Amino acid sequence: MSTGNIREKFGRFRILIVGRANAGKTTILRGICNSTENPEIYDGDGNKIDPSEVEPTRERGKHNIENELIFRSNDNFVFHDSLGFEAGREDEFLKMKEFIADRAKTTFLKKRIHAIWYCIPMDKLDRAIQTAEEKFFQEFDPGNVPVVVLFTKFDALLPVALGKLELADRRLPLQERLSKAEVLIDGIFSRANAWGRLSQMKHAPKLCVQIGGVYHVFSCTYWVMLSHTLGMHKSNEGCKSLLENTANVLDERALQMLLVSAQETNIGLCIKYAVQE
Figure 1 (tube, rainbow, N blue to C red):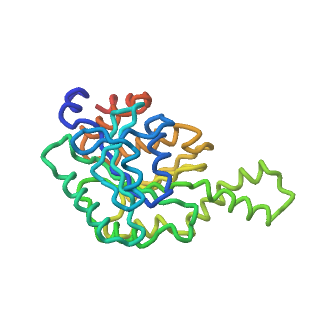
Figure 2: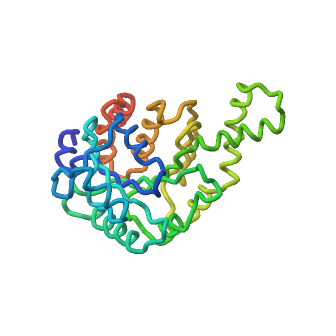
């Protein structure tokens, strides 16, 4: 099936992004779409919504998950934002479950969601996995929609690592501390066991990606490690790797090609999947 036929059948690649407030979701979406602007917002019928009408409702917890977020820089993606349910509000959790269940199986293929990105910030490592995450991954079965966990704000671990190195040897030059910090950050993250806990839950995510500063990828079915010296806000390498690994966990070849074609600037990824085809 050609890319044109795939787009005609499935429409645009649709992602639900989940996470608590200040988890870095908007930063990730801007990076994916190569934009510095906020997305335009549309209702479920395609009518454009004035952002001033949306923000107050978000603050009151009445956010509409059905709204579509589309960036003018790349309208091949459609994003839906679930504000999260860290406060333990059962109604928000039920709305999200209903949305995913409906959009995962709808016969209107252009409205289906194709992937879920669940953002968990690392700036408070001791509270990374909270009741909301346990509830989602223990109680909710997303069916055929793959869930990718994004450990965001991973660069928040850098000051912790540098502080430990300075205490160990104050004479150590900064550049050498930075070099050693990467290894130390791996140890800090491993001891927190955030990914270990998630991977043992009943409905474990397919993949885990660390974003910010040091960049790695972990999976329940395979282990890949990719290191970059720049975070997503400084380089699009993190975006490319996130998209590539999301494509890898999609169970339909057509959806893989839809995702690849949506990322217009990632020529290398397009060539890779074209060769596989």
